[in-house]
Image (cartoon, rainbow, N blue to C red; front, side, top):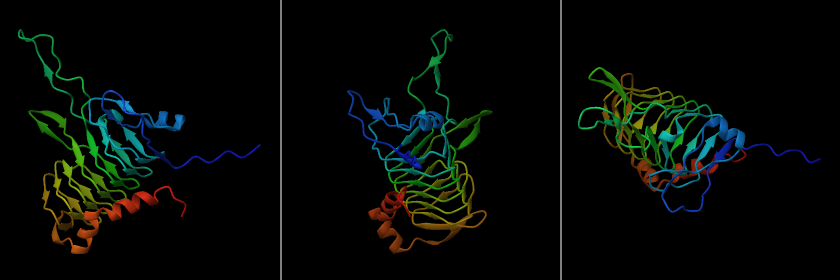
Length: 238
C-alpha cells in the first residue's frame, strides 16, 4: 500500500468558473477548511477577486465573511486575523419609529488585504476602534498592495498604503494611517491616530520619523519584485 502524501502547509485558492454575478473569493472557517482540504468560493455583492492566496493551515482567521483578500496574499502560521471585529450595519426605522431593520444585507467588511501582501508568523491584524457617543465601534482596516507585515507585528491602523514595510514586533496603533512606501522599523510603536508620510522611515517608542526610504528600495518596491519573490518561495522546499 503506497504511503499517504503529506498535506501541504498552505492552502492555495484556485479559480472558479465565473458565475452570472460577481464573486468574492473567501476562505471558510479554519476548522472546516482543514477538514475539507479545499477552498470554497462564496458569492457576494463584491467585485471579482483574484485567486492564488496562500494561507497556512495553522493561522487563526475569524469572521471570514468580513475579510477580503485581493489575491496572491500570504498568511503565515499563527497569524491572527480578526474579521469578527466589524462595525454593525446601521438600521433604518419606519416613519412611525418602529420596526428597525438593517440598512443593507451585505456583510460589513472588517479587513481588506491587497495583492502580493505578506502577513508573517504570529502577526495580528485587528480593525481599529474608538468610542463614539459612548458606544465602542470598530472601523475597517485597509491594507494595500505589496505590503509586508513582520513577525509578531500588531496592526490596528485605519490603513496601510501600498508597498509599506512593517518590521518585526512593531505595533501600529488604532486609527493610524501609514502612507505608501513608508517603513516601520522593528519594535517601533506607532501611536494611535499618527499619520506616517510616504517614503518616511519611523522608529522608536513612540515612533518618530528617523529617515527617508532610499531610492533602491523604492525602485524595486515599485516594480513589485520583492513581494512577488516572497510569494513564489512560500511553500517551496528549502
